Structure formats: structure tokens, C-alpha cells
Length: 271
Ligand code: SAH
Image (cartoon, rainbow, N blue to C red; front, top):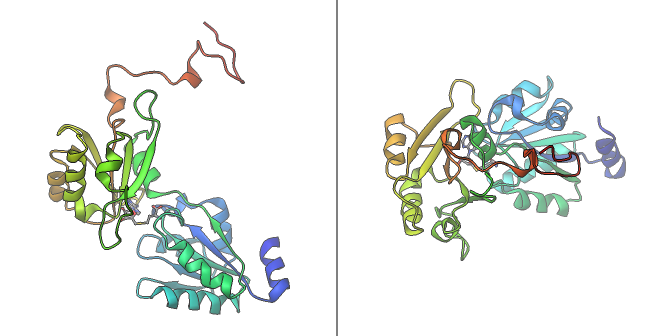
């Protein structure tokens, strides 16, 4: 038991609820802190099919493990509160990072109302894992220094000013969550923002999953056909970025940090 969870039990005899980022799927991509919390958890509520392996791999024997896929938000918070009355450490395990499309605040508010301590352990987001899988960089000097994490409108409406066409006008790296079945909307938006037909695009299905990960490279013109051929229609990250494929470019602007002619706090210029 950690000092933090002991303290919370001493105060009100209720356990502490930890929202832990499980990472993108590979159970080894959870943080050390997340793994330690799972190892001492009395109960774990995990979100969907992507993170069950981390739960079963790191949780102790006798731990109550429950899948939340058939539960409403109210049922989930009720379950967590019930478990906090029995255990010092209760984990809500979520894919990637809990603060991205994770209903974090909606779940935390009833806990606050119930006087239960809670905290978040960040996780490796699937956006990061997808770029890592493809060996791509989100930023490149003088190409783009900005990353947009977004989605297209499905049942959840997009707030004003956040439609993909407006965001894409910035020509930055754009990681698009929850949108693989709406790829046609992504394409329409990128075209409306003036991205050319040969703009490189990347789709990664089940990033970091050993044996199941699929990396699809294409262009605005053909990425949809690539996905269809590969049978990718779920659990996928779409990336549009002017950095894609830079490994093979003839010319590349160097990063100033490692440039031999550039002096900074830790190194004097050598030339
Ligand atoms: N909190 C999560 C995102 C949850 S929303 C995170 O930080 O990654 C669910 C969406 O995330 C999916 O529709 C998909 O777009 C993306 N996703 C989650 N896991 C993924 C993975 N292993 N590979 C590719 N995309 C993934």
C-alpha cells in the first residue's frame, strides 16, 4: 500500500480511486507507476477490449477485475464507489491517456461528491504509439512545430471553430481519433483545407499490439482504399502530417539543438 492510499483510508476509511492510463495496448507500455498501482489494487475496472491484458498481467491474485463495456457511466461510478469502501486502492484502467476522450471529468465528479479521493496517472496515448510504430516524428524543424489531437464529428458534436477543415488549414501534424469509419469526412475536410491529393497519410490499427498492429501508408487520394484492402475499420489512428515520410527526403532542416554550430546551455558550438 502506498503512503497516499494509507493516508486516504485513515481519513475517511474509503479507498482512493486511480484513473490509470494503460497505454495503447502493449501491456509493457503502461507506466511504472500505473503498474505498481495495479499490483496493489483490490479492484480494477477496465475500459474495453484494448487494455484487458494489462489488467490481467499486473493485477494481484484475488483482485476483482471487471470490464466496463456493458456499463453506463452511472453504473461505473457506483461500482468504483462500492469498491472504494472495500479496498484501499481501486483502479479505473483506460486506454492510452485517461485525459483524452476518456470521460474523466464526468466520472470524477460523483467521486468528489461522495468524498472519495482520486488521482490520475497519465498514459502513452495511441497518437504517440502510432507515430512511434511507423518511425515518424510529430514535429520537424521548419516543417511543423505543432500537433493537433482531434476527431471528426460523429454522435459527439464538434464545438464551433473545431471542424477539421478549419484545423487542417494550419498544415500541422493532425492525429485523428475515433474517426476510422468516418474517413470520408476526414478526406473532405483535408481537401477543403487545400491539402493536395498526394499529401501523405498514415493509418495505424492497434498500434503497439504484438502481432496485430497494422501500419498503412498512403495519400489523401488512396488511404481509404488502403484501409479497405487491409480490412481496417476499427481501433485505428489516422494521421495527416507534412512530416510523414521525412526519413527518405533528400533535404532536411537540422534541429538546432544538435547542430554543431549552435551554442546552448549544455554545449558550446564546435564550428
Ligand atoms: N485515451 C485514448 C483514446 C481513447 S478514444 C488514447 O489516449 O489513446 C479511442 C480511439 O483511440 C480509437 O477510436 C482510436 O482512434 C484510438 N486508439 C486507441 N488505441 C489505439 C491503438 N492501439 N492503435 C490505434 N488507435 C488507437
